Amino acid sequence: MYCSFFNLTCKPFDLIPNPDFMFLSKTHKKAITYLDYGIRERVGFVLLTGEVGSGKTTIIRELINKNLERVVLAKVFNTNVNSVQLLSMINDDFDLPVQGKDKIELLRDLNHFLVDQYSKGNQPLLIIDEAQNLPPETLEEIRMLSNLETSDSKLLQIILVGQPELRTLLARPELRQLRQRINFQCNLQPLNRQEMEEYIFHRLQVAGNRDAIHLEPPSLDLIFSFCSGIPRLINIICDFILLAAFAEEVRDIDEEMIREIIGDLDYGHHYWVQEQPDIAASNTNSSPESIQAHSHWTESRIEELFNKLNQRLSTHEKETLSAVQSPLKKLNERLEQFQNTFTEQLNKTNADVARINKKIEGQSKRVPETQDLSEKGNLPKQDLIRRIFK
Image (cartoon, rainbow, N blue to C red; front, side, top):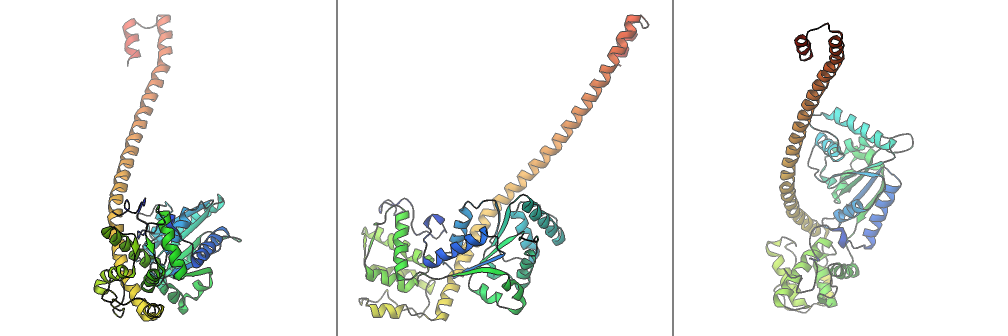
C-alpha cells in the first residue's frame, strides 16, 4: 500500500519470519553460531529459547535455508499432541508411512530409517518448535529417541525450540535425564536501544530504501520504551508508522505521531498492559528521564504482555495453518487414489501382455510341426489349416 510512496520493494516490517531480513544482534549471532556448531559436530540435544516475538522462528528458518551437507531434516511446529501423534508427525516429515501404525511400528520404522541414513553417511535432524507446550511425559519420550545411537555417534540430533517456560519445564525433577543431555543452550535476549535502531534501518535497507523515513533519537527512544527491544513489537509499531506517514504524505516522523500511533494500537490493551501511561493523550515533550520511567516494566507486566500477544498470534497461526493444510491433505488423498488406480491398471495390463506372449509362443512352436507334416503329405490341406488355427 505504501511501498511505492517510500520507494520500497516490499513491506519491511511484515510479521512473517523471513530469513532475508535476518538481523544479527549479539544474542542472535550467538544463537546461530551455537546451532550451526551443534549440527556440524553432531551433538545430541540443542536448546533455543526466547520470548514471544524474539526471532526464534526466523533463526530456525535461516538454519533450514542453509546448505547443511548431508542433513536430513524433519520439522514439528504443532506440539499440542500426545506422544504417538508426535511420533507420527516426525515419521511423516521423514517421508515414512504412518497410516494405521501403532507406536511400536512407528518406533521400529524410525529406527530402521535412522540406521539406514547412518549407513549412507547422512545426518538426520529433528527440530521441535513451541516445545514448551509438550507435557513432561512426551518430553521424556523425546529423550528416549536420543538413545538411538551407535558406539560413537547419535543417530538422531534434536533441537528443542520454545519460550522461557520451556526452561522452567525442563527444571522439573522428572526431566533430570533430559536436562543433562542438552549439550548447548541459548536464550535470545531483546535488542538494546542501539541494536533496535540498527534493526529498523536494516529492514528498511533490505526492503529497498534505508532512508524511507527520518527518525530523530527522541522518536527512537520513544519506540524503544514501548517495544522493549522485542523484534515483533518493533515491527508492529514501525509498520503503523509507515502507514501513518503515508496517509499524511510525510517522511519525518516526530514524537507526536508516534504517541498517536501507539495510542491507536493500544485500544483494549492488546499489545501493552493497562498500567502503561496513556501517551496518546500526553502533549508533554519526552525527556530521557520520562523515557526511562516509561521503559521500567516489572517482570509480571512483561509476562502479561507476552501472554496476551502470544494468544492472539497463536490463534492467527492456527487458523492460517488449518487453511493451508486442508487443501494439501485433499490433494494428497487424490494423488494417492490416482497412484493406486494407476498401479492396479498397470498390473492388469502386464498380466494381459504376459498371456498374449505365452499364447504366441505356443503357436510358434506348433507352426514348424505342422509345416513338416504338410511337406510329408501326412495331413490333408484342410486338416492342416484347422490344426494351425486350433
